[in-house]
Length: 175
Image 1 (cartoon, helix red, strand yellow):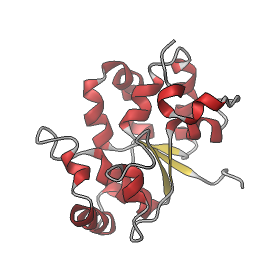
Image 2 (cartoon, one colour; image 1 turned 60 degrees about the horizontal axis):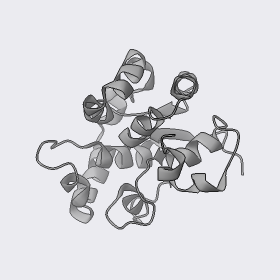
Image 3 (cartoon, helix red, strand yellow; image 1 turned 90 degrees about the horizontal axis):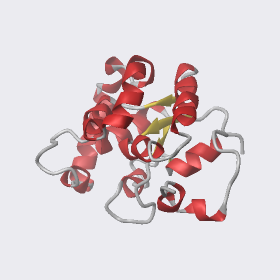
């Protein structure tokens, strides 16, 4: 299956975990190059969440205009309808960030991915019930969701696959 036409929407945790790798400069360079080609994006809410991780924010911020989904594309009635539906079916998408962040990235990532045809890229557990991948599998959403390591291999940024990389925690392990 060719992934040439796929567009990817990256979650906060993907950028944070990439910063733990010694190859982070090269990986960020490849991601920015893909953003230039219109294949990789993120959202305003991710930039807000990245304030807790200054290294990741510092690497991404100079390219914000290139990588961030344009506000006029992000704020549509169709996306809002999906976010409203998620509010009813998956209130835990808001609960995870607590009262300190009333506008978390998770529901926006899912709504934008569904509406604009992106694959969501997150390191959240694929099999846990109250996480992004579970919400992506809702019949009313049904959008593709993969892990950061899967993304890096799929787009050929990482050329070698090792069995221990199947688990994002093992892939991004410092060392």
